[in-house]
Length: 317
Image (tube, rainbow, N blue to C red; front, side, top):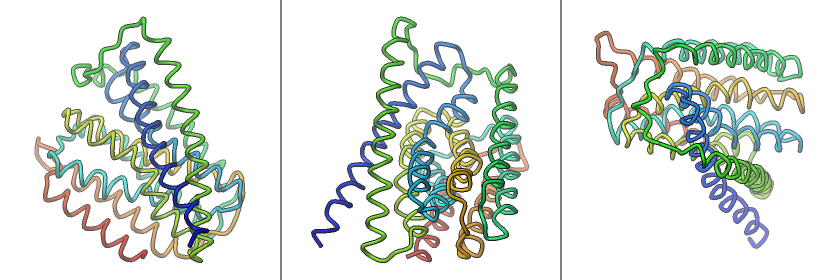
């Protein structure tokens, strides 16, 4: 038992530092965005979506470098499952989410396309360098689309954003961004190492560790950001955060093991985990889009999403 103490301490301290540093990174990212008058839509998709996906990206990179590709793949898919079922579910229970579907429908469509594309690439039970390049090409297309949308005045509703930052604070904000990013890298190393060691001690596959413990831990920043946003009634940022984070998890996080350490994909991923991710991506549309003017994710739907998450975790463990 003493052998497991250090890995558990590494996991707990790593997750704590991940949450703190991701929160600081996204908070100061929002401040910079406000200074340059970037819309809440772009903040939700890029600043928060990408910012809160950095833990997944770093953990998956470090795991792939060490040859633990199962952990990397599990982290990407498990985080997407957690984001829609757990995070969006909890947010809806706290406060029904008013979805601006006209703004988010194209982003959901892109998420659906990338999810289907990932399924096709994984279908041969192999994730190789070519697959990684295909996913990265989708990342380039997504950035091009988002920057084009950034010029669209329909997204420039600055009343949703409560942060006001004096331009004199830009230097301080940049320093905090650099410090928080450094801590993000270090804490991701702790989480990756701790997760791998726990898996070895208990004889658990790194895929299961990635789908459960690591996925939940690296999704905590998304949870913190989403709860904070829903309490401030910044609903576009809540849904944008989930959609943006899931897109980055597929086209950035999932690409990493293919680019760094091509390997076979466990059969469970295709038979169990990917179908759940695909189902939840479809459900995101179902609960968000209503055939009337009010597109609201209500509390009942929030409980339903959490129920799916609980069943999935039960199936894993």
